[in-house]
Length: 472
Image (cartoon, rainbow, N blue to C red; front, side, top):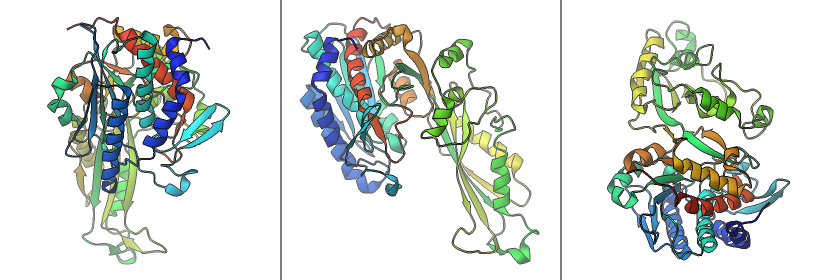
């Protein structure tokens, strides 16, 4: 490992990062549970105070109709300095099932592993760890450059409802668009391909969902008297969801692929550079026996660059102990769709209804509920000069050249498209998570050396972005 002033500062102040995480991760800021509304508010208060302690002269808590967000700004003293906006979130996922946690989810626990020390806690990486490294990174940037203000004006917007679908975030962005105006958006809610593979996310998928209810008889019927003679909604539902994909693994909704932007040869080549051990991936958090999906695409392409449809839940009839011999009156299913570049969430409503209508048998009534909104897909401009600055920053933190930093795609979804669209700025992604971090699952963890590199990379980034000339 080489040395730099940024790295030396980060290394000398790791205890500060550890102390911040130990305090923040103890706050159970579960936005999906109304019982934790006070904890989400306390999390915002903690972050606001931490930002003031770091030196940000402007720190505000912005209330919404849901959970509060935190805004901070540190103007650069340099005339015409670019403005960078960091996005993250301070809410966390629920912890159920609690019995599967090896350590209490809100008691941060240090675990030594062959790969390095891990910190186990809900939010350790998603997303409190990814936000916390910016506190140390800012201090390292100032110390390394000898500046009293950052080389670029740095703003942060850290929302409190990302894990609940960011229902009020777009309204917040529009209401404060003037305060959030920026030249570039730095998203810190993602990760890298592996601990020894410096990489940058370049795209995130969108999301749309639906709930389908099939109705047959007016009431549950005796299966001996009526079974085999009237339509069974659960049978119809099983056939319906079985028709969601064809024999090649493609989604069968009419028009589903009409707007999908094909992967270019360059994009496939870039994704192909990322080291990927499918057997290890299957044996890891996936715990799956096989890999499957759309024919003609690799596993990495399927989870990052191709649209999907997944049945999230099915229910109906009797599921208690023993038997209840009925033909059920209703059957239900929840389905979500991950979308890629150029797909529009609003298009899914008509597509789902047309698919259901074509596949429901006579005697079954269908009710399709597709909530409005959804999440649009987003992507970075690989040729933007700010991307070069990001690659140089990551390369310096990993002791490699910028052209050795690989590109990956994030299979999940978030409000990044709204950020870019409302604020009119390009997206960069700088996160320290790993595919093995068990986000959204019991025993979430972060490999602490990844946070150290994240802090160093962001310290380099503010210096590197200062030299970028943004149009407009």
